[in-house]
Length: 403
Ligand code: NAP
Ligand code: MG
Image (cartoon, rainbow, N blue to C red; front, side, top):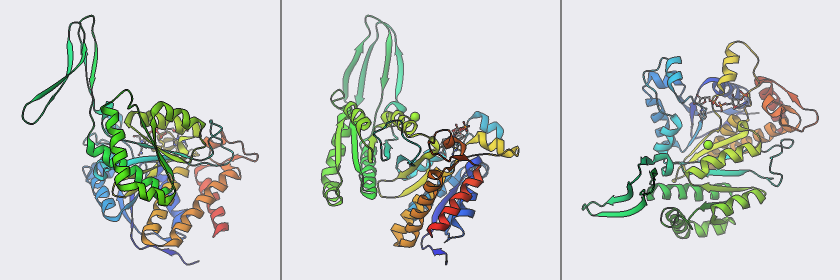
């Protein structure tokens, strides 16, 4: 079979530890034999970030803006221990944070569903994709302790020096705590557009929820901005695509999500998304089966796995021990990016290949061949736990049957 040709390169962001090992295996076993893979390669491995004073991260994000589609390997976010371990010049910032800030994007996380690994919520039949607004609110809040007798106010001073004061609380009868938080219309607008675009791109309904009945100015602003952008820019497109935008209260959303069969995008404010994404990921089974895509408001896509670099497995691997690391989410990052590249460049063969590779991977697990993390969860009858590489080779066997 002739290799599939690409037009525009994918931006390839390599990463760290066990996922870096998997990255190479996926390319060698599942991509190179079938695609004349064109990528613009950026090494976001921690050593190279340190060597380049983290410029490589910024350059990879700029390249993503230029080409429109990127695929990223998991990377170490340095902490004090990593600074020591890698003798870093600085405690470099999270690459994902840097890339997200440059692309102004929203992260969408969705589980990969396979037969035999049933969600804990029995009604869930299709993936629930969570979109988390990753700016502001409690994550950029200022807080303080208020002593007894204090009076706390919100003071907003406009550019002419005029003060607007709102009483928060009079602590006359006892000490307490105060928190001030903010968000920005522009950030909420970008979030809304990323969500509406992703709903159109994937053909799924979009749900959004806040606590606007209690928070009549703050949360209400989120509700209004979504509604205005939907009316002005997306209503007609949603109708044409046969999908819906649905707004409700956050409590009602939670109740409906549990009763639903899935298959929609749930847009969440920052804190809701932080909490709910952990709940949804766990309820679907495994972090190793969670995909993630960063979508900018102007339609730029960066695909990755939701999990980290699987450090514990990497250290075992370095000691020469056998590992059983699940490559599904990293593989689906590649297929997501290849499919999108195929769509944008009009290369049907490339998108079809991505579909087949996903089918082959899912079939491998459904046939009972899986890594240890899934072996513990799976109800498949002939299930068998295999090592990291054996799983990828089993996917290749199944892929060959589909080509
Ligand atoms: P992690 O890499 O997600 O792994 C945590 C644990 O989850 C693993 O030890 C393993 O459990 C299980 N696991 C995760 N992915 C798996 C997979 N593909 N196959 C099998 N098991 C899997 O989180 P971490 O160990 O807390 O973080 C390691 C590094 O990743 C950190 O330096 C962090 O900064 C980075 N990180 C990066 C990203 C990103 O780039 N998007 C996201 C999160 C964390 P068992 O050990 O029980 O087998
Ligand atoms: Mg969380």
